Image (cartoon, rainbow, N blue to C red):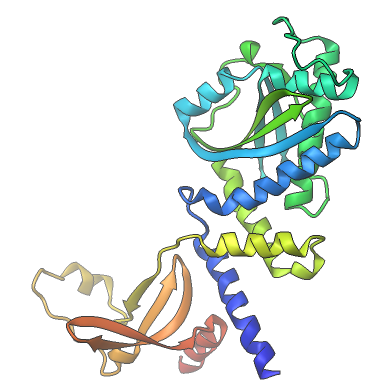
Length: 311
């Protein structure tokens, strides 16, 4: 029983760190495994509808600033808005013309037209219908990844990127995941653009998957995801609890003034990440370097009860 509890303790701590500190936008590699699986799910859904040879692969993921977001949309051919009411947000699907043509080839082609060049032309109702089906397969894969299959991603308006109304996309920073689609030799790309407002809900969804591996349909995928997330870099800090002061006392503080610490200050060091307290520590020294020794995990509920009991 004690051995089992020891195995569960690191998982609980990892979950606390994920939920409190989150993952850095600059550390997007932690999401690569997620979107590789999404690309595979999307490819499998499309392959089930045709006999044509299909490959869907994750290409890259990156953070885009405002100008890069605008360029990504203008350089695409078709844009789809995907409201996500549960997140209070939306994502944007931006596909090039070849991506739509791949869908046409897969669902209506002969499987042997890889050398045919389709002349540039306006999107027809058939093109838009195929694009909507492709985008629907992508949102179904997103539902599979982030909501356990419950539909929270809704296909909204589709528009030719050249005719997209100014100001339709106002986000100043987005995360772009690009997926490549190849059908009988023809290749196209679609980018899934996620605003910052969707970043935290995605972290929470991934954290839920990590806490419930038994309910995941693919244990090997869960293992890879846990490995990738564990490599994410987060900041931790050790701090000393001095006590309390009045605002008047703080206003009188001056450079060079000496503050007296409690007698047990050496045992009052805390380790935290973001707003999440992690461990109680003891201050020490090794050679010329200060150190901290981890003593006990912090139980915020017990600490609150102790404070209330102390008055």
